[in-house]
Image 1: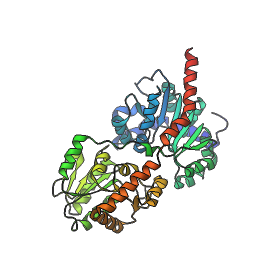
Image 2: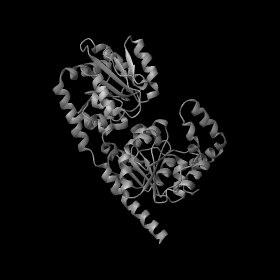
Image 3: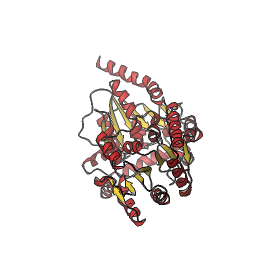
Length: 434
């Protein structure tokens, strides 16, 4: 291990090396809790039956669904440049989205546990020519092993919330050593770039947020037609990517508004679809009627709440609901992505807890392209007002589309920043085969 690493990272490596024998117990525990894919557990140990492509290979690591969706256009650009792509992520939901949405030819694997023996096995098999870490999911052994092998390391779409920044500052030497392993950090904004510099990243550039350049979420035409037919004549409001507690708020909003809007249908799409059954129980306890999408049900004429507990179908909801509350923002989660509903013409509401997307929400709010609501009363008032005033709603939705469009361009800037490294890989490949 390079001498430059502080004792904390040396100790971390020794400690994780010692945990290798008990790793199967951890994976078995996660399997019982439904957090691992039973047929793909070997990927967690760096094993795979998929061969490495013969050409230059770009490895992109994403934490979960949001990061994976963010890099889909980038993967397409890399394919256009004749690079194969290995994409890793850590969650079952991200693996399901990968199967549905990743460009053809992209290899998806679950990220290995951050244990040196498994990490070494991962690198010995895949031998990536360059490694791209998305946002801030930084695993020490993976980073140190890549640096030891002289694999260029680049952080893309780098993001560091104020909360994470303050937490990371408690271990300045450790964080600085990890960030010094990166050849380049490409940050979402000037604010994020400054935080990475303050923590010790030596080479930082601001390229913008890749999420702004992601295409509109898809919607199956047949499924969309069925849903449109089912909700014809209804007044529709949706809460998407919701977290625990927020569904109770949305159900209360429905109760407050249903007398004024007798045809009101509230759609709830939880961030974690497996919570659908629990939400159904809350709806029943509120003496309301519900249908559940994961059961193949469609809203009926008397349905109060439609629970959209499926993966990859937010594109359907954003094409149906003229008003969308984006979740994770009343719960202390930091807010979910408002870009997709903005692109598809929804008027957006959100709570105050939006530190995951601070700059985007600030831009939307300042342009009157979204509105902050701090509690159930304010949410009910604003939903009711927009349901009554289609013109006001349309003005907000149009401003959201314009704001998001004006903030784009990160994909081109990211590709430009990567191009010198990609060119070097091409030259080395040619020299090797000459």
